[in-house]
Length: 301
Ligand code: AMP
Image (cartoon, rainbow, N blue to C red):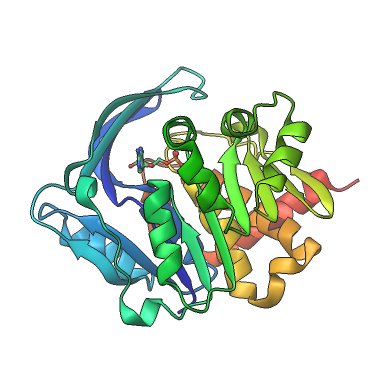
């Protein structure tokens, strides 16, 4: 086992122009771990209620994901629902019922603590810190956050990301966190806050990696049928960090970092092809590598 992932495990209700699903498996931890499981061994930390279906646990276990850190608490699983604009670039949250997630206090099983890679999905910065503190031999830490934590718990967040090697956020969050509207200045200011590498996700427009070696821009993959963008950012994170964890020593190598950005983009794009996590039921490593190759071809000049 090598990568520990922490975050929400949820049921989601999603409405997009392609259709709607009232309740399906979701959550940042779920998406990150499924995407990462194609590249490395993964163990998750999260909480679910007594309504959590065994077939959903089996989907994760079937991909080799260690569920020892998935706590079962009395009550209902976190529920989130949203609706998308006609071009699917804007998402409106309809409901966020924290349920058992409200009292979540992540506790790492003993065998998780010695693992070398840690990815902290979007949860309260204080909880992210507490998980980081439980890891005894970590080689690289990556994490995500959101506008709510940037606004409401800024000092706590700054103390938290200071200890990270990788920060993955979207462009509006990068602007909000830095106070700069142009992305290059925003990135420079964020790199001063601690993380060695920053990845700014730009939805359908791709992603930019900023680090000591300058920046690297990857376009978005042009999908023929966009069905449901929920989880795409988390799948990017899972593909990116899962690839690095699978390569073990690669976290410093600028070429490997670029490949990781492309694998992140590949996993984000597959996620959008079906509702929820459905695309991961059939996805193969050969399809992933095929799309990675397509990126090579359509960006080569
Ligand atoms: P993404 O589309 O990558 O931003 O991820 C969407 C996933 O994040 C959904 O499956 C939700 O269940 C989960 N999610 C939404 N809001 C929150 C929140 N406040 N805290 C943790 N997870 C959330």
